[in-house]
Image (tube, rainbow, N blue to C red; front, top):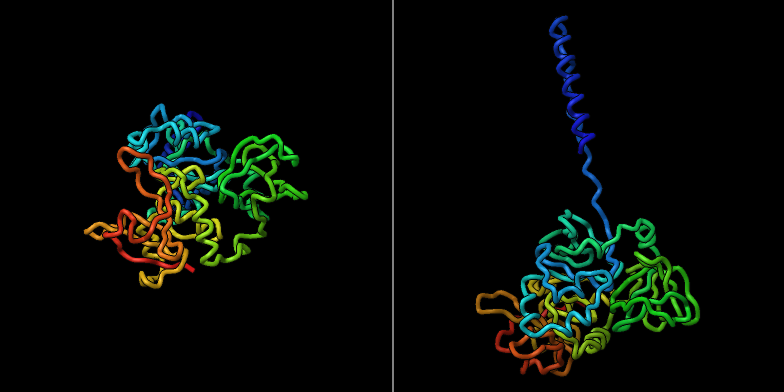
Length: 346
């Protein structure tokens, strides 16, 4: 800022002198033409922790949230060590989550925090993605990683998998969630060599991921595929804003199940309902989403139909007990009397 201030002062001085000379000679200054300054390119960064949690404001985290706001993170410890009341406190404080290697656009920075939008999580709140604040230490702008994100990639299809330093898969450096995507550098009989945002080349088990040349190569799922993926998460803790294998909220769960199969649907329940095609309740097929609303019409909950009258549901944390994703009969779902409609995306 000091150099810029000095430059401005010099320009101003020259302008005054020039104006005086022109006045003395009776000449007029040439007409200035406005020059449009190009918009600066957006700042692109990538998540370099297993899962980054986005907050509504910077710096509102509590001491108990330390496992979620550091680098590295420990999402299992974060959820397991909180009481139900402590988890409920997070409602309205968190926005969403982003996985390792996921692209974000940085809108602004404040102290040790960055205001970002997450690509691949559609919302009417921002055309670039889902917004929120994340600790800046959980991001990297590594250009080498960015240059490789348009190449062949591995999509983690197991609930979680290890990231390893060598192809023997013996020394895990971190755990990755389902739906994590990393550029592929090569393969062996049992392992996939991937490029990472913060540690160069690493390895994941070939049995835990699928390799695709581009997102459009991911096969469109069948209803049975969606139901099978949804059932993988039964028993997982409910986490407000969660989109990872360590905990989901209701719409984070449905969004992620579709994302694993290469389909992008909105991040939030109300937007998911507006995006899908209406289907009658008695004609639902596996993978259809079921929505619940208050008397006002506000959509507050979503679950996924599994077939034969069953639903996969990530319920809110009930006072006095830790809620977990459950498989429940549709007519016995806790919000059954608030049914607002069903939607299909296939």
